[in-house]
Length: 193
Image (cartoon, rainbow, N blue to C red):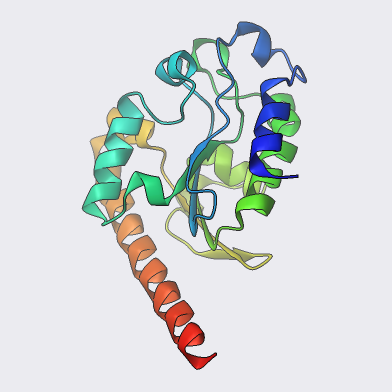
């Protein structure tokens, strides 16, 4: 299966009640061979309207963070744990997460990112550990199956609590440093061959 096939299957999904209330399925977007994948919790109102991840107020803030850290949105892959908007922008329920998790895991398998940034508690719990605390794990690198995971606060949390901006900025500086080191490592391997 390729990413386009997975996207078509996801658009047809009716596995949970979220699809009934959502206007669109928000699959994800970006570089299908991205070294870095950003995973949030679920689409908000603007994302549901446009069918794109992180295009509302939190997405605008994320874009500014990415630019400041030296990344272009197009070079990354951005998605969410659940692909349909939960009503009233509530957090996805555990059953909804479990329904969408195979889709997210298939995206990861197809894209093969070296780094996954878990934006918020829902993504951290879905990808790292069900009982994980974002405040305890934020900023820590976790290695799983050859992928480096970096949990950090969701951009929406920064909009509610400006005190979280500094820690997230520190996390994105770490992300940039590790990404650059991986790129240098890859280049040196290519020159050795």
